[in-house]
Length: 167
Image (cartoon, rainbow, N blue to C red; front, side, top):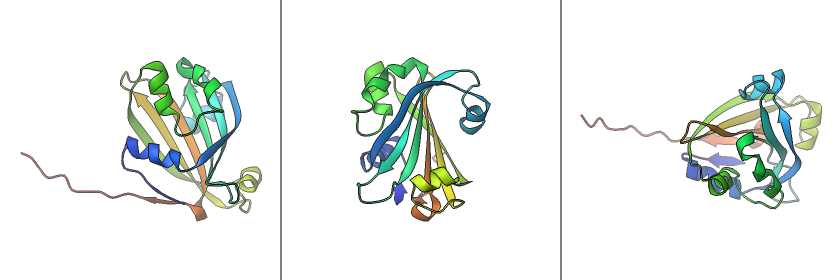
């Protein structure tokens, strides 16, 4: 699996390329472990939706995806089972907000037996975890996503260009 993303609009194309099958969709209170993993404030409530992304039914899942959606926007939860594509444009449409920044961090993780089994890879294999924090023009975190990919099936590419000095 290859992902070439350079802008927020490119995230739209990525999410359109794989089907997300939701397995859980419920409000959660952020405990210490979730706060540590996601940076969400301890004790706050978020809509948590998680499942697996697939290109088609014949291949192993691309990744496990976890969405943590700000309680302010939790009403979107009732639409998620029917929705295809990324969630943040749905938040923008439903609530009149604008996502202006997406911060991404990529880290290596060891896949436990349960997650490895679901991703159809050996337990103890290395995975890559992409965490994205979506911020609105008001400075509010709209959602945090955590995508966990088997490292052997993921490639991240980025092109940098020199910006000319305009002084």
